[in-house]
Length: 487
Image (spheres, rainbow, N blue to C red):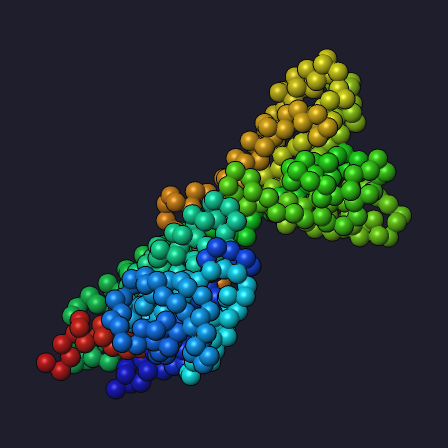
């Protein structure tokens, strides 16, 4: 039947079978001196490694039980170390293969000796980067989104990143996409069955209407998932906060104050900062990429003009812009609000709701000037957030940090509440392609059902590229389960 041929032409996912039967080994703990180092082995020769190096050939090997053994070189029989060994018979292991672990002392000489000894065992080789996780994925132990979550967890630097990565690694995001995949496979199976068997009157009435409703619901769910304002992606890569303003306003001083080190040169000479100075921060558990930029002014210096161009480019790309203003430069004749409004228009290309005005050098103002300035700011209709600080005396810094933390927290959201967040740009691209393909079903469902089914198939393939698994055999399973064809 043409139905079967079309299904067999569908782009499949990664095969669950392991193509590489070699046994691999590597240091799984961190490099450098440490109390304990873990060397992991995975593959058919893992048991041989335990037999030859831990003297366990004639002893029972209880799975997942630590045994204290002398670890020896299989060629010279020299004792290399005394440590713990564990046996993980497949498929109940991280990779799904037979596995073993050597927990040894973490000195570089000990680790090097054990790795060299493992390399002398027949059928073993050093693992490539990420190869253990790749084998776990190919064996079906981890989905592709869980693999990405594991990578994010390893590289997490803030508490919020850890929470989001752990949630993704636990499978929340993968289960959402698998649910969509299952529903879409069911729709495609029903549509394909209707195309091939409706003339034989073997298909129930209303199958196409049910598929249409399911596809419409799925489009709505995917679109809601996409409308997350990039919270998960921001949390994964960091919120981009850009410090901008005129020369000598104290931008570099603010950067140094926030990162608590002299990251940027501070000088009374205008135009000292000419390139973007970037540093990573942890603001209340959320990752921030903080950028100091060149002072915005017209300059005959070609290098400084390039710095200004780069500064304006960063402002356009920023998630949050900190517009730093020198308090001393604000007019004292009851015109501070128009002055600040004009200054914001010069710094920001558009009205930015994520802008925070930082009035720096408040320590140079008299008490009377401070009160007057605060009174005027309180009368500003629909103002941006304004914080009075002093990078010199640290006055107002705590209130400013609280404001910045709230902004960053709002942009990232709570990784533990609500549905799982999109964390990868590739997820977003494939989901957008999925929605576009599913809309093809609605365009052609009344004129050419084969083209409509092709749209559903492409949508299914886009989802499969996120999870790493989609194949025609899964659709065939549903066909024969849901329809008694030829009965």
